[in-house]
Image (spheres, rainbow, N blue to C red):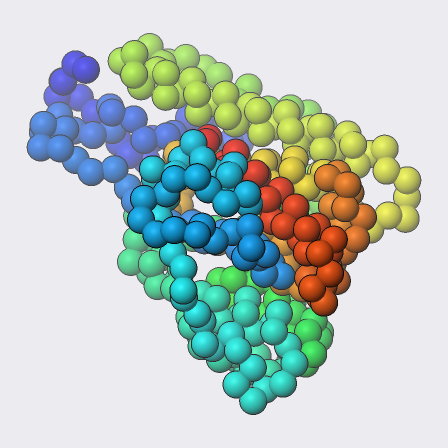
Length: 357
């Protein structure tokens, strides 16, 4: 690496007509003196939540110490086991009933990052500031977005979602205050536009027209990209190329999702731009979280994989039964095995994301 007195500002953008693309962290953004003193890279935090509990028969190892052979559910993470700390024998007491009766799903997701016993109510919700927001308060000023809230299913914020517990508990992980949840973004297009230009001032019709002709934001910043590329060293050029390729790949996935939705028969309850395939939806959202980390757009993420209490079916792996009903298995082995299969499917998607990170 060549050390010169020149450096790029950390907030350098590739600019084009009506858009700007943040850059990943490059060596050229670290002043020569700071490089010589060993500047530290940002530290990131992501909370990933899967619902309805886990079949612990296939999750817990039967030994302590360094990870060796992983249990069946965790085996997709085998390539990364040297980087994993697996904790056990823990409990979250505020997720228990504590004289409040039924409503485990509302309680467990509501208390997960808040650490409090949430108020059992449909309209008078009360939790606490979640720990991701405490971290965001500390590091959020250094990034464009103090935190990102992402999910894959069900954006309802009102109504009864579990035995007298508001949907605000089952459908959110992040809480800005004891009465203000931060709803996750579910639509890949909405997340993409938030990261790379939200067009919030446009009407839905104007936004639709823009999508017709704006095939790629990278086309608009091509000249700026070429000019910057020529000033970078080989390592930074590789980082920039990989980063822009990731954005291009996300755009292609979004285009595919939109075309797929265009073929769906009218009357289906399916939000615009959301892939029908769970794995594709997961991959698309985590690809964008990865880009957000690369560009240092945020350092704190909550990811609600699917909402608590979901009855989603996983027909793509041969399970037409709803996830939630299966977890009330009454110790029927065939149903327990299906729960374990769903658990492993979730871990497979997570492992794919870890590999990319």
